[in-house]
Length: 362
Image 1 (cartoon, rainbow, N blue to C red):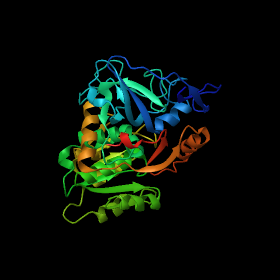
Image 2 (image 1 turned 45 degrees about the horizontal axis):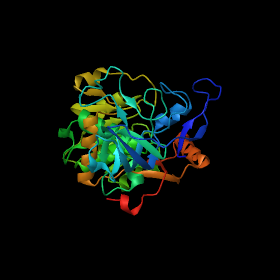
Image 3 (image 1 turned 90 degrees about the horizontal axis):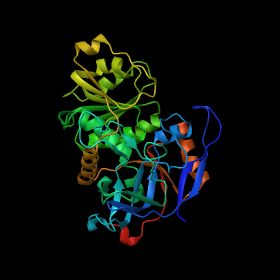
């Protein structure tokens, strides 16, 4: 029987427990009339998967395959599915309940992400996955299956923060975009999208090595946020023709508005997709006087997912992969989770579930 990986229950309080991985035997799925069956080639971790194992994520449950990111080949289709999908290499939209509204999910139940919760009893960390035809996009041809699997959720989150929230007028040549906390999947995709759009991208990190790697990926430069008055050092690095930051993509929160008010142009934007430093963030009068917009941003719609994949295809953008393990080796997969716990990764952590066959490559 095909395999799938979920979590199994042990006693413990949320935040203190660490649910073990479970390798499950599951029946090979059959498609309903509007579904396809995907043979999964690769699936990738997100921080939410670590939170699920720690019971720090809403709806955490057992027996549901983990992970929201996946790439594979369509091996069977339902009776009402367009025959064009058969044999195609695809990426999966990582959530449901959000069609195309720029404001947020239209579904009253909210956005339901794949993997590990009772809100959406499906996930990508399994050998065969049944999913509705409407949730597929062709995998960009220039990406390997491992790279394509690294794209969906972080790519979608970065796309909404960079393009929808900051606006295309801030992504032109000569514009300066600051991406904080470089090294995580979303931050690296934000760097790639802003760079591919033509903007100058600057980064912050607590690691000089990560700043150097980001410069190797196309960032113009970066500063260590552990240094006092790092914002002054960054301003001195900006080109003469534009000595201000046009937009900030942030996943930390904390003092980003304080620092941002000193860095941003009047009317600049701070798009915040996470608050890893803490759940509260002061909004200062200095930011009000500069007309700075602070915008929350999470995941994205089905339309934004398509737009993001199309952009990746047309610009040949690539996600950064930190490490890959092969097969359903629980010890090796646990090692990926340890990388995430320690913040040791630079890019995405990916499980290669099955090798692509020659005829599955487009």
